[in-house]
Length: 137
Image (cartoon, rainbow, N blue to C red; front, side, top):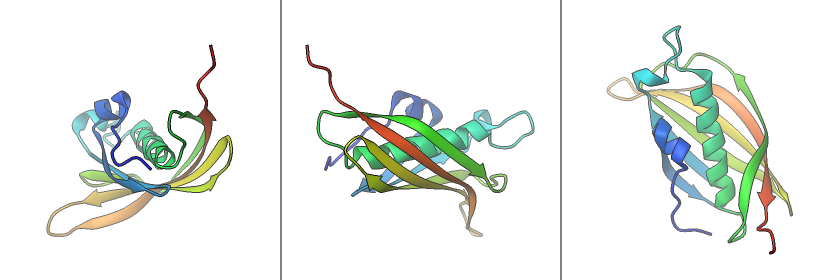
């Protein structure tokens, strides 16, 4: 298992942070900024989806073999309520790690930090990742 991981360039662009990972689990977060909002003044659904996908990728990376890449083959997200607050967290857990496919479940939470701290579920997701083996020359 790797001892450290770096966020993808796209994840860094969005401001996603890896909080913790290991043994097929991961926790990632993002501080909500004005550029994350849609035209209606709420966090864009693409931000929630990208956070969930990135977090799932970290969970998979904690288990996959050395020198092997992975790619999302499908992702399903159910939005439960609009996110309110200044922080989003995603939790991911690999439910099945096969020879080529990994099945992952994710939850995204909206948080308000401070004196009246809150944490509410805003989306449930699941995804399949495919292992991508290096090609032989």
